[in-house]
Length: 344
Image (cartoon, rainbow, N blue to C red; front, side, top):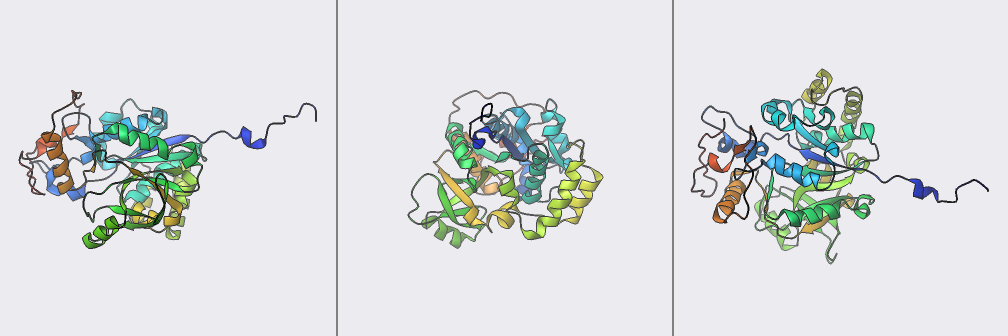
């Protein structure tokens, strides 16, 4: 008919916006006394630097800035860490930093920012980037971050996870197992095994499994659908709290009460592990990636950093950033790391 557009309806659909969620609410308990100074103050590792440069949190923010503008980066922090995160986000809009009243596990730490984003952008997609990773070759990781957030990947009904090549059995990681003969590139997940014992981890590696890095991308609706049925009432209550939450930097009394009443949720164990058919993964080539969440991994990373000649000059650490390397004795052997009390 005259005057009516002949363009297909599907062409009018706006592309989904991508957001980056930075998980930075962990307490770093597995590092124990390794990050505690003489006064008994323990600085969470994400606010520390490995080499006198940017903190691990700042490095994760730089990865996110390679994908989205700053107004669509949402760090998730914890009220008890305010002294460390607040100086780093003074120039950020209030609505982009989400503060949990307490740390109740990665499940709640992930769910809260998803619902905050969905309030204004219900069709959004997200890339989740943990804040405790060190990467030697950032350009390699950046390429796979782009692949994981490509339109083809985000239009899929599956979550895309980034897998890292294991160099030894480690019972502290989740393992992504592919289907046999599933080729290269994007691969469907056959099973997700969260933190197996060392013998099982060795078997998984021999079968071609990779470490789950904790980095994943997908649509908000698909991620929320992974939560167990036991969390449905929690999700409804969180949506109600978020709807009338004026300032995400200030946890409301209602949110604090909800956190206090609910048991911690582990996103990998309680969501990913139970839904392998909804997952796919990309295997990242060796890039010097390290999750520095245990003394042994931290020691290995610091030893590697000290054994290399610096290729570039790092910028001075900003206020309230602490150097992990100076927190330990120079001779790092196994997990016996002695704190030197460098936290101010």
